[in-house]
Figure 1 (spheres, rainbow, N blue to C red):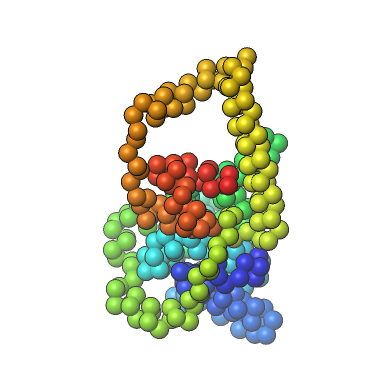
Figure 2 (cartoon, one colour):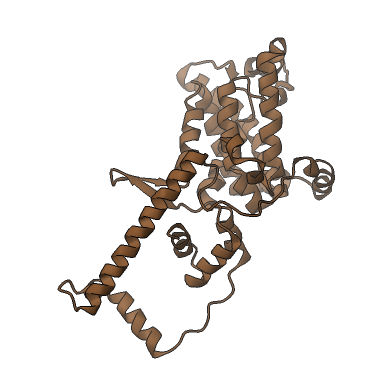
Length: 338
């Protein structure tokens, strides 16, 4: 999936690219070449509590020892790259760092709560950079607009977020104890997003550190912005993109036929009385003929960036926003119907 889209999908997301390459490479090396060193990266809470091996809170929460977890978390990070473009690398890094630190505390509290309530002792939890990945579902749910693409049996909608939630569910069910890590991550994401106890100001990347990393590490993980951007989805495979284009083309043809049929009925004074069913549209048309409207204001750059992150070109985004009077939802539907 990642290979099929190429590195151009990671432009303006150097941290996401680094999180894709480095932890995945370490997971592969530990699985095939350095299996004896895997014990160093085991997330052993029992050793932390009894032997005070606090360093395991760091080593056990960096590299996934299960390749399935590494693959699913990489897919999620790739799809969450749009959050880095929207928030900026510094804010995105601060979010990951803050939730990574908070989730270490919540991991211990949740394990203690499970032991008190259920009498179950959890000695180890799934290793890897997992809690911040689950924490990213909070801004993903709140910030990324939900765009319907299709329906299954006319009831179950498929949106631009469906694939991400499916991968998250797969990661959640990969281990019996993954639920603890997921809950800890989501709680950390809520704490950081809502700025509980002023955690955003306490757990953030200093400005001087951001400048140092931007000069040293960012050039290593930067990607060239693609000249022509895909018009479909984010993080989809070639087959999924092709299928989506076919579905959108069919939808466009159907809407065009319905529009022509409606105009024909209206010209003929058809028996269905379209204006009766679409009274607001008729009134709007009368108003438009009565007094010309002022041209819509320039589209805000935030809305332009938001739609471009979904894979549309800047020219199409500006046209859609101009046609919809800077309404993001209408503009999104307009772009999907092109």
